[in-house]
Length: 401
Image (tube, rainbow, N blue to C red):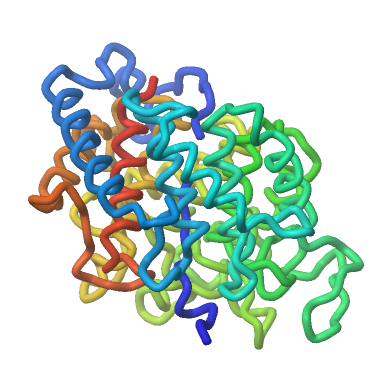
């Protein structure tokens, strides 16, 4: 039997048009990116070449039924949806390309009576349905509109609301830390990874930022931010108060203790915020319509400027700094495209073209066969199909306006 811990904790991810940001906090420079080109010809060519090689690798891994998996049918609907999103965003493929059409046929065999798209034996119904929604939304094929609408309705029903109950029968009150979050699919302990995926799916499917469900979700996102001014959680008051994000605001066993996959904060105080979750949180704030000058957004952006790096997952403990690296790359690309500026000025005043630096970083990790894989095999990043999807999706973000 495959348990939830064995199944991939996917996290993927939309761009919103943003107004120009004023001068970077703490600098006297002109507005970041005001006159900078987002992508030069050299890096555009390199990104396109890597995307083509990555796509060729993914197509070569297709299984006999037209789907993709992590072997032995593990995570088949989720992996299939990820690859399909890659393909429909590539100029060589379209909705009637045989590999795309057959892939969607295989994916939709996992449609359930409740409207979700997932394998009941595998769990992680929210993750899988969210990725399927993003793939169908990207395809823009009217043939899938019915399945898309049903899946969106299913996702809405996963949000934990006041009056609902946890699996052990406890009622969710208006002050409960689980409220407004999304879990793996059965109203268990929610987390920012699950909710970030859910928000991204709804927004990519056209749900407005001011939709009540998105605005309710924003409350949960803010409970994951290490910012005591806006987060009343005890753990937020104990930490460094730097504006980053952790994995979950409460654990299954103790509603007063948050959870960070990076462990405790420096000196054992509070919890350590880290790159992949901070970029997911930053994205989620923007997707929910918060303005760039909102103090909560600025706090997250200052964290990004303070911990800027692409050689590792920022602020993870050194011995584990490569864990979740490609998950981070994808969240990084989606978040900064949503931010809308081509140049980020770090806390020391150094300017970074995020597209160029991401392309260069991914070039250094690419294998000869066109795939990517992470030697730090946590969260299934040792599997090349999953990691290649993360990498190509991130590269595709660099080519978008």
